[in-house]
Image (cartoon, rainbow, N blue to C red; front, side, top):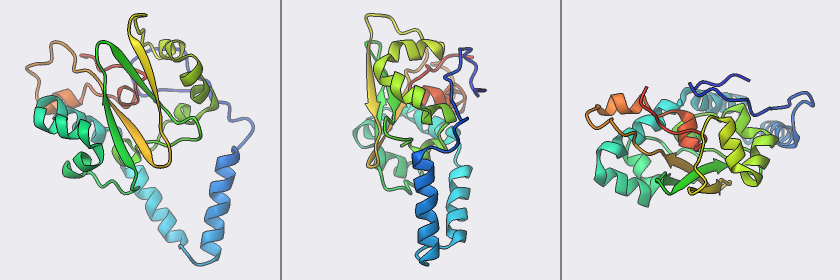
Length: 208
């Protein structure tokens, strides 16, 4: 599997040899039923997929960069992520509650969806394949420190790791720590330091 970030690591294996999983089959079956009954049209499904495809992690990066440079906005984002992203101009079209959690020197936060692939799509777009894979979903809970190590993220033993399980009603977004030495950077320059993986919590934001 390829990754769109600079951190070298052994891949979290995704086994697609068995074809679609249970949830893929159920989603397609439900879609066919709704279309057959005339409750939705195939065009509506296609239009929604186009919306999903149009969202990129850069939207989330811009959001976090604003929080790094605007303490008042950061406070609002941490207090009520759903309202803050709408204030920022992001359409929270899936109606879920967005919870933004800040990384600290004492606690490293990691996001997973142990049931399927719940993900903050209005902010980050479509989830990567490894996020949806059974190995990631299982190891994030059983061995988060070892999993992070595979992504090139070495969390010191004195730092607590907290795993946050997204679900159908609420999604998590991680605010990485602002890198030391970035004090003079513009908001746009800061956004370039923030990757999708750092907003999931498998990596950290770094000066390039």
